[in-house]
Length: 332
Ligand SMILES: Cc1cc2nc3c(=O)[nH]c(=O)nc-3n(C[C@H](O)[C@H](O)[C@H](O)COP(=O)(O)O)c2cc1C
Image (cartoon, rainbow, N blue to C red; front, side):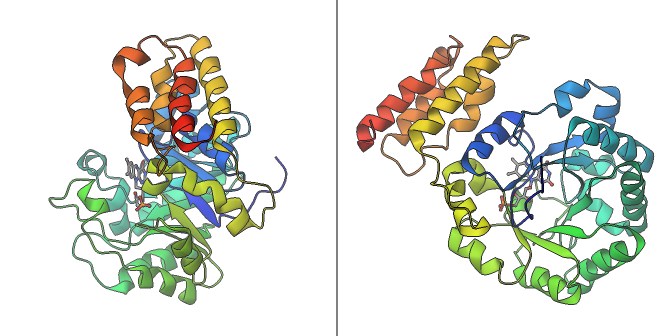
C-alpha cells in the first residue's frame, strides 16, 4: 500500500465484532477510515494458530492490530508477528474493564501502571517499524481529575516513542460495573480529551465514546486530530458511506446498496467454499445492521439470523434478503 491516510476517522476495536469479515464489509463502504482488530491477547498469538488470529483480506488496510497484555517481551513478539502479517499499526489496550482482563493485569488497570505501559510500548516499538499506539480511558474508578489522564499521556510521551493516543472519554469503573455498563454509565468528558490536544499539540489525539452522527464527528474534529467510532459503525455500517467524502475530501460516489450486497454475496460464497468449517453465519452476522433505516430492515435481519436458513450455508440467502429490501424501497 502507498501512503496511508491520516487517522481522521477510525472504527474502534470491538471483541467478537471487528473481525476480518466485518472489516471486509467496512472497507467496501469507506476507503480511507482506519479499521482496528478485536483485542487479541499477545499470548494467544505467540502460542496459538497465527493465521487464525492474524490473517486478513487483501485490501483491508489501513488496519491496526490491537493487542492485550502486560508482558513486554510477549507483546514485542506478538507485535512482530502482526507486522509480518501486514498490519499498519499495533495498538496496546489500556482501556478494557473486563474482570477477566483485570485478572491478567492488563486492559484499563494498566492506567495505574504507567511505567509498565512505557516498558510495554518501548519493547513493542523496538520490535517493529510500524507505529505503536495506545488506547485508554481518562481514569479508573473514582479518579476524576484531568491530571490523571494528563500525567498518563505526558509520561508516556516522554518515556516512549508513542505519539498517537486514542482516548475513550470516560472512566473505567473496575469495581462492580460490567464491561457493557462501563461503556454507558461513567460520564463522557470530551473536554478532557480536547484539553489533552491543547496541552500536547504535537501528539495525535483521537477521541472516542458515544459519537454517532456525522455532524458530531465534524464538531469533534475542530478540537482533536481524529474520531474513533465503535457501536454506531457496527449497528449502522452505512453511516460510513459519507466519511470518505466528508472527512477525507474524496470525490467518489458513495457505495450503492445493490453493489455492496453483490460484493458481500461473492465474498461470503468464497468464504464458504474455503472449507475448514467456514459458514455463512461467520460473515452474515456482521451484515444485520446494513439496512438500518430502510423499509424491511427487519426482514433482512430476520432472514440473515434465521438458524434454519443459515444452516443451508448458501450465500444466495443474502441476495434473497436483499430482494425483500429492494422491493420495499423501490431499489430494484
Ligand atoms: C462489543 C464490544 C467489544 C469491545 N471490545 C473492545 C476491545 O477489544 N478493545 C478495546 O479497546 N475496546 C473495546 N470496546 C470498546 C470500544 O472500542 C469503544 O471504546 C467503546 O465502544 C466506545 O465507543 P462507541 O461509543 O463509539 O461505541 C468494545 C466495545 C464493544 C461494544
